[in-house]
Amino acid sequence: MRGPLLRFLITLLVCTAAGLLAKRCRIPGGMLVGALIGAAALNVLTPYGYMPYAGRFAAQVAAGAYIGALFDHQQLKSIRRVWKPYLLIMAFFLTANLLAGFLIWRTGACDLMTALLCCVPGGMSDTPLIAADLGADVGTVAILQFVRMVTGVVLMPWVIAFLVPPSQTPADAGQAEEKPAKAPKGLPLAAATVAVAAVGGGLGKAAGIPAGILVGSMVLVIAMNLIYGRAYLPMPLKRAAQVLSGAYIGCTLTPERIAQLQALILPAVIILAVYVPVSLLCGWLITRLFHREPREAMLSSTPGGASDMALIAADLGVESADLMVTQVLRMVSVVLLFPQLVYRLCAWLGQLPG
Image 1 (cartoon, rainbow, N blue to C red):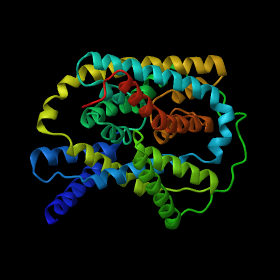
Image 2: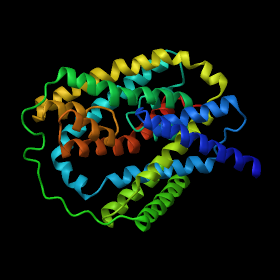
Image 3: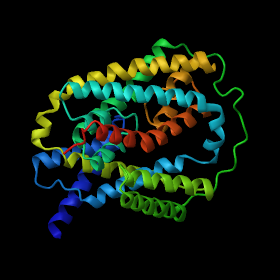
Image 4: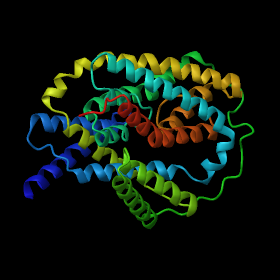
């Protein structure tokens, strides 16, 4: 036991240090990206890279708990204002996912399951873990999901700032409503949330559904949040989940896989070429059809993380509660539905891995 335990502790130490360094350097998704690079370097250069299955399970449970905790009664009440733009965004993102995925598959860079998961507009932390459950190439998914995330978090805000002038009216005009007092949060509530998520992850795994651990934990925490009124996952636990995810992904990268990275240049270009115009077109239609402020509409249709979009929106002078609601709905729906659709499609086409 000492050998695996020592390797696991060394891997965690290296990944945590690399994640903190990347976060300090303001790299998008810094904790996850840094941990991934640290684990990959450790795995390729030394014999110490190691991440057991329990680490992957914990990362999926934490990721599901974090997403589920974002969806509360306020999000539920706001659906009546955002459901039409939300459905349009989901339709465009599903189209972009399928188009980019099939184009990448046709290049011969990877199998169809991997290609489609590379383009899923979900979280970079979540999608590679889902890929591992579905038997796809985790390393390829992680690298191309990073490209997609950079597209959403770095490239799209620059394009929006360049193309769309700032609005003269506040985005939240007419949206103001009384916010309920926040319930107290602390370690007991965090422990209860993690316990509920772990039970949900176990049930999801036992049910045998695709990505069952993450989906099960997310669904049960959403139910807890809506019924009990409170669910909470502190940021340190989210950071720990990112480190575990990055460590697991990095430990799957071998010298042979790293040597094949040049084959992913064309797939990366395809993701950029599909998602940028699709996001801009969707944002333009939201502005035209639903009379939303242009920058808010563009950011709503950008495939970034909900927390990332909140910070970017502030930098672009957009203050909109609906933007956050739309992004949270998009993230929950993508994690819940897209992997199931990808799995069923690949099964129908006879393209399941292995």
